[in-house]
Amino acid sequence: MKKETDRWIKHFEAEGIRAVAINSFEGKGLQTVTKAAKEILAPKIERMKKRGIRPGAIRAMIVGIPNVGKSTLINRLAKKNIAKTGNKPGVTKAQQWIKFEKELELLDTPGILWPKFEDQAVGYKLALTGAIKDTVVNMENLAVYGLRFLETHYPDRLEKRYGIKTVGEDIQAVFNTIGESRKAYIQGGEIDYDKVAELIVLDIRSELLGKLTFDFTDENKRKWSITLRNNSVTIGLFLLRAINVALLLPIKKIRRYTYKRGKT
Image: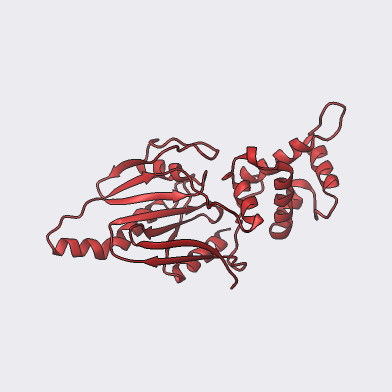
């Protein structure tokens, strides 16, 4: 996973986007966030000093999909529980400024998603990470997608966890195998397929199959289009949970920020 994360960092930096690898749960890489923010705005701050203007604190806006770890990052940086967190989307209800250093202020924001998924796989991947509420997702379909994803990208982990080498077309047989091994039964001794689906999804989210990368650079199914203007001492910190990367972009410099699908 680390190798793929490194590839994504190189991918974004090749497009002129500063990216750093972080792990908010373990507190790894957090110092690089503050350092990168200062480096990005160094020219602007230096010009202000030459004009006799005392630069204020860097104001950083934390932006990302729901349940990506925005509040967890803030709490780690602040070294105390300031922002409310939870293992589900929608915990942060409103924007709030949080000061924890003289040189940096953070704006915690609710998670955002684009209005429509042109690629169904995008929705499934987001749902597997917990970015979409389970109440609006068909858990059995999500579990099947998760199994097929593991079969394609992590077949060794699929076999180790469930004793399955291939998923195939007989999904019921696969669910039966997993249900029997996990003793997921309903009254009468039949397999509880709803329970099996939930177990598969929770296994993925709980990293019982190890750390997973859901988007790969060699697939290159997404392109980020960014046009910049003017200068600002405000930056945006975009968190991408699926690849453990934080992107740092000047907020007020952004004239157009779009998400497009495209081929290599």
